[in-house]
Length: 470
Ligand SMILES: [Zn+2]
Image (tube, rainbow, N blue to C red; front, side, top):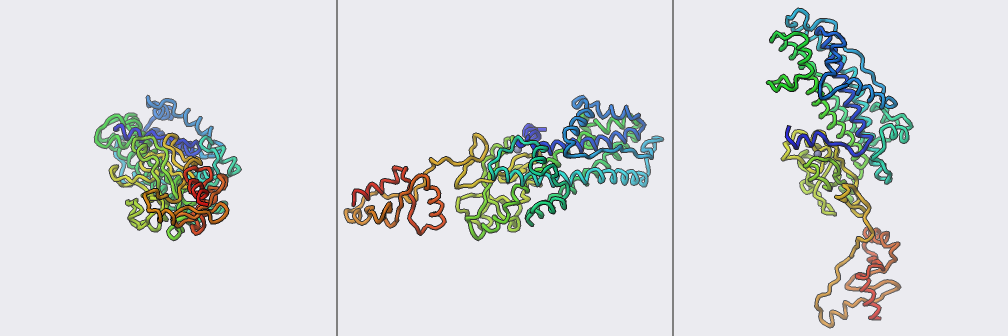
């Protein structure tokens, strides 16, 4: 694996509750795959203790069973899934003779049934929770609440009284989901379900392939069982693709990416209606900034600002410039982001920037940013409130050479209390405390006087000049 991919593999969320959700799902699925392989090893003739110790004997991963136990204990107040034993009664390798296609079919049906039963409900719960947590993160940020160190249990207890939804219908009944949110969540669940099914198929063909190859090569059942688990070191042909370890690794990458997509959709979806409105009324536009992600690619993409556009107007899923959609942004923002945007299927050099997750295992997220009041701080990789020192000069004052008459006609003159007319504009001196509010009003309706902050000595020169011209 090259260095860049390794970096991408190791990205960690800086938000605890979503990081824990990922940790649980990974552990659960690892334990489930372990159980299937252990069951197959027993079927091949190993005693249960031999089979389980085989699962534990990867030198890089000692005490796997203990690890699972501790982890499930930690999450037991949120998840109560159990993993029952996987025991197929017919011998896969009784006499050393290959099984018939019909016998394999029966085994695969058995495995398929087990897989669906113990992966589907968990996948649904994780997808729903990831989406709700995304929505929750948006809410924490909007209310300026600290959230990064909250555990999953804390969020479930404090925000959902311990009854965080597990099922899609559950979530729709209890919470006010907009249609955009429902669409996003339904789509995401289809995608997750597809990957779960696919992983099950991979396990079926992995076992079939390994057992058949073992019989063909006259390997003993114990050797076959061992290959099933740890054949990863041997980089021969396809064999490494079929070990329990590589299946778990593949699964983990896909799951992390899918879960991140669900979380991200939960962050963006509450703003979908604004995005739609903003096509007519640019003031409603919603902006996001890309934060987080630790690999080099993410570091370069940090701080990328994007405007949310309704997913329904995106005709080319691989084109992210606002101008290509015919949108000219008031703030000069170049990129568009939409719910479900993804780099899946693109080569790294084609990856779009303003998208989370941007690559497999990615943990970067889009944060809402109000471009008038907030800014992105590259040092903290976070959105911060702009300091008042940021000054706004309504119109450049022209100090170039003028004739005496011109000067006379353009002289600033008082036309009322705190009101000065100058160069075709009317200015109003306002106290620092009300300056931002007045400025906001003036932006909405620019027919009134332009506010000038009394504390801004540069801008107040107009008033000094008008004082002299009295
Ligand atoms: Zn990254």
